[in-house]
Image: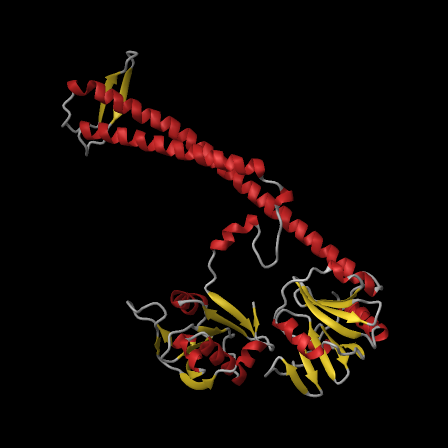
Length: 427
C-alpha cells in the first residue's frame, strides 16, 4: 500500500472504530487478522509481507491458519482491549499505531520488524526490544486506488488471487515445458539407441559369421566383409583390441543400446502419461508448502535456520555438523560474526554484517543465546560461547564436520533466557 492509502485506513480506524473491542487474533497466510467486537467493522488486517493495513467487513474471506508466536502474544496483551484511537507513524517507515488505552500497538509494515506492544515507555513485547530509530522518509505521493478504506480488503484479496493464479500458470507452463523437453530428449535417445544398437549388432554378427576365416587374435584397423545380401561392408576396428575382442565389444555395445532403448521407452511413456494428466485445475499453491509442481524444491536442503531480530539483524543457524561447515565456510562472509557454544557440540551461528559494521551488545547477546539454544549446553541452561569475526575461523584438512580452529576471538558466559528467543522472528 502507498503512504496515502495507509493514511486513509488509519484515519478511518481513528474516526470510526473508537470504542470497539479486540475480540480475538487470527493468523492468515499473508498476515494477521485482529477480530473486533462492538462495531460494524469486523476486523483489522495487516500484512508485513505485503505492507498493508486496512479494516475488514467480512472476516470469513480470511482463512484462519495455525497461530504463531506473534498471534499468541497479541492474544495475551491486547485481547479484550478497547481501541481508543489510531495514527500513522511514518517516522518509523510504513508504520501505524493503534491506541488501546494505556497500551500502544506499533505495527511496522516490514518483514524485518516485529510489531511492538508498548505500555507508556516500556516495551511489553517482544522482550528486550528497543524502540525503532526514527528515519527521514521521502513521502512520495501516489494517487490512492480508492478513497474508500473498506475497498482495500477487496483490492488486497483480488491482487492475491491474481498473483496466485499467475504463479499457478507460470508453474504449469514451466512443468509443461519441462515434460515436453524430456519427451523430445527420450524420443531422440530412443531413436539413437535403435539405430546405433542395430549397427553394432549387425557388425558384431558379421564378424562372428566370418570369424572362422579371420585370425581372431590379430589386431586390425578395419576389415571388409560381405553380408547375407552379398554387399561388402567395411567395419572399423580398434587396433588396440584383437578381432575377437572387437566382436565381443560390439555385442556388449548392442546389448547396452538395447537396455538404453528399453529405459528410454519406459521414460518416454512416463512423461507422455504426465503430459496427458497435467491440468492447471489440479495445481494448488500453499504459502508454507510446496505445490505438486514444486516437488523438486523438497530435495533442495537449506543448511540453516534464519532468525531476525526486532531491530533487523539477521542470524543464520546451522542445522547439523556438515551444514555448519557449509554455512561457515561457503555461505558466510569474512566480516560476518561467528558464535558457537564452547566445549559442547552444537550449531554454528552466523550474524550477517556489512564490512566494518560494528558488533552491538544486543547482537552479541542474541548470538550467544542462539548458540546455547542450538547446543547441548541448553540442557544445563547455561554455558560459555565463543564469538569472533568469521575471518578468524579456520579448518584444517582432515578435521571432522563442524570442527574448526579459532585464531582470534572472545568468549562470554550466558544463562539461557527463553524470553529472548521468543522475541526473534524465525523464517
